[in-house]
Image 1: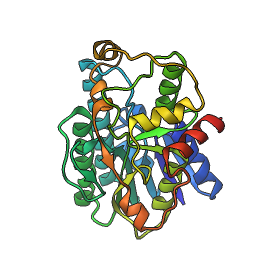
Image 2: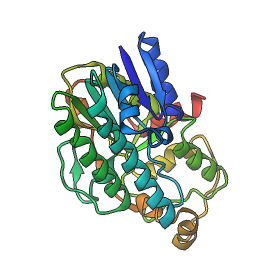
Image 3: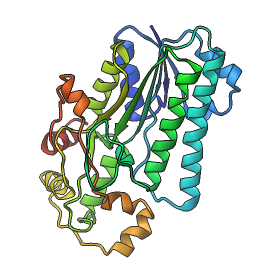
Length: 289
């Protein structure tokens, strides 16, 4: 079985590639930057014969979202996923699966959301996720028999992930204070669980559709910081919002968003999370280097 992995350079990508190779699969590695350099015909020829395309590039949540950065990120995601979909016309034979990784910040801040929810937010990350979803749906017109799996994940945490490193370093400097009242839910999943889910959904032929990939228990910012302080015992400053915005830009709105997400379809399918709550997740992040 040949599998094409888009986004193989990240910690998550390396983990997925290693897992697939351990199962005896042949992995073709391609980065998003290379997608836009190939014509649809060239990319289609390169993808011909693979059984699955895994587009697993994660969104860099904790970054300073200037207007220029947001435009660049949106354009990069749109061009890349559109390149994949367009190239399918020129694949012979066509892949049987497209698995796309997106973000669960698509959902609004009012309700508790399962995989079937359609109550969406109007923020930047929601726009990116909706755009990706629209492009992925087009596969149904290009390749009606193709299996589509669309994953929506929150902060992907591991000892090597950018999100965890930012939180850990900020805590060690004493500036990882609570934003607002700290009761807002923070959708998170450990990288090991995400790799397990990608492997499961990529290799089970009868599974398709939208899947939320977050811990099965919702955790607040207060609970997250409490779990971190068990390992980093530094007093924290309460930074004013204007100072946080100076460092994070519009990304601050994401930390304020109360995103309540549950992976109902995975739970119903019997998947058992290795990190089922925030304490287990942080324990693995701090101890598994």
